Image (cartoon, rainbow, N blue to C red; front, side):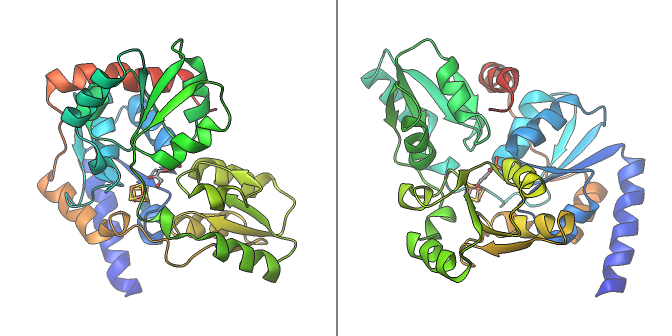
Length: 306
Ligand code: 13P
Ligand code: SF4
């Protein structure tokens, strides 16, 4: 197994150089994929990296909307998604057509779109945000009414921190809803000294039990800075690999072992190699949509981290 990986890794690294490619990986990717990436991060960090890279090819180890965002920002680069089936079910809970209908219902509302959405939906939105800057984005907008799509839980969390009127879309993450408040209360009893950090895609009852509500990038930073020796992690369990690797003296406890995103796990070393060999599957956003979507994504990048 080790030997097989060593050979695969060598082939990936040599082909990566030949193709002038960069490998970007999300914090939920399997450990061996994170370990060969040039950069591992959250959605905001990955978009920032994609926008700045001078590589000719971006191998995106994440889900489809992340590769689309890279394509929106880098139309002249080839963006590869090693498995085209790696989607985000939450992003598919809204379409551009349904959003247009809702906009007609709330003509005065500004549309803030979580980056976990398709390029078509971004093209119909005023501003994008990620979990790292959602509140800052909402607060930066002139309008009093915000139509927040598609994550109702991130939207609800922001609504508890702002005076703006938030209209929420009923989308949610199938992975994060598997974390139950009972999981947190049980783990807090077992580890009374532990800090609890959760992702804002969690249900409000889970968020209410947390010490901090953070993007995955925020969780990585928190783990480095905290004096706590035990931390309960309320997000997809792939992040535990990086947390342990970078903080060997601390203990990380997954809030629920059920919190696995099957789409994130579709990317493997083998598929990364094949994508570099075949220069496929490629994600390319049509120019007409890209130009509109880029306006919303650029605003998100201008605002930066919250
Ligand atoms: P982050 O931007 O916090 O990494 O979250 C992305 C995501 O898909 C969470 O489910
Ligand atoms: Fe989408 Fe949830 Fe997977 Fe994130 S964890 S990519 S929101 S399904």
